[in-house]
Image (cartoon, rainbow, N blue to C red):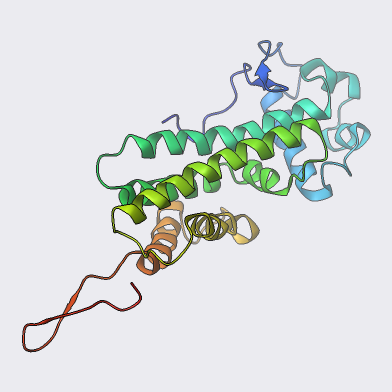
Length: 230
């Protein structure tokens, strides 16, 4: 899995297609640093509420200097949401390669997704706020739905293997599970306190202790007692 903190190398997708290599940067900003400032402004003001004039003011450079690096707001949004989505799909690929049962792959995916969120927090936050108002947003939502289907498939597989409660719909479990993960974007700030690994431990303890089918209990006389909630 590519390190979740890696920066864009100038070959990011442009409107869903392979883009041209980034041109040399102007003094003060390259495309990566421009992207990070733009994502901050998008998260503060909303994508629709951010103009190129506003980006120019925040960056302290002219609009023509911005256009030296990107074609406009749409490309900045594309680069940003792809940074988040590419991290999540890399986490899914990593989880798929894990040996063991589906419940283990699911837990691995949750842990890896928390790491992506923690290390790409501004990008994931922006992804979670897109509403499908533009072509770029529609493509991002389509990729999010594809990721959701992968999670639902893992949940269904874990249920078929008898490792999680059979009385909850897999699609609901997937939404609740990643709703818990995504909620980190509302309060987590990388300034001291809990790190990504500690947060992943807490999420998995809360989620999987409630999902896994409890083992049979043994009565004092040695006779098995059926597990409750199964």
